[in-house]
Image (cartoon, rainbow, N blue to C red; front, side, top):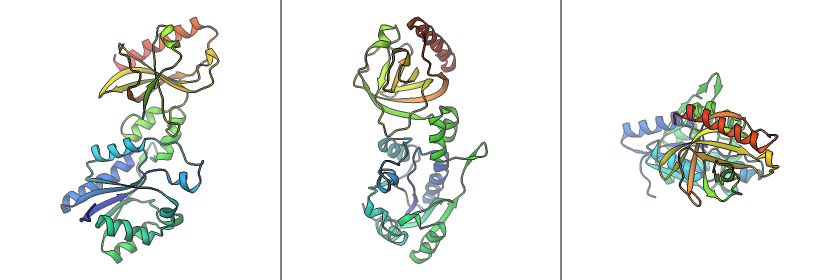
Length: 298
């Protein structure tokens, strides 16, 4: 990669939520005004995965989807993904600015959130960045945190809401429904035997899935988004233990085994329930489908 005058923003950008979008949008507009590149600097993994293995949070997006969202939706010219290693974590704020922003990117302006921290032990602050900007000749612009219902929008808060099943709050904060990706794998075929064939989506354990329950969703298959009901849980009526993500695509009968799909969550219908009989379960599923069709306009 050649050094060229650039406006940069820096962050992990998990979820690329509306707060991130505001910051990145400022960087893109500044780059357009200057006829320079708009660059996002991000990392291949959550820092806690390296600094305290096992304590890292679930992610809102895969790295591939995060990169694609940054490039396609945010109109950036370049996304620089740095491998987050112990060596990188030990770089001081001054070293990071000189080695990455100045020598690699050729930065003329940096746009970050007001709570931005960087460098070894997160010792660098916005004030530090301003001081380094004076040394190296680049400007710094800070953007205030965005709020929804008096709550600051952050990846942590969105993750907490999704974990609690509040996918509608998460969608409003993200600016799009929460999505999980994965291949369709073979299950035990129980849904088909009950007259409701489902696609069993294998989601990486590193990705945050909503709380157990039933949701309306759209399942993206080869670019088409198909209305669906999605059940997350262990199938307690049958004594299951392993959590699954199972999607019933409305008015769709194509074999999806082996397909890579994306599930976009829209609304939560109910909690996961253990029924006294299979007949009770089937009646509840039929009612879920009826309500789901109304909610999805299908």
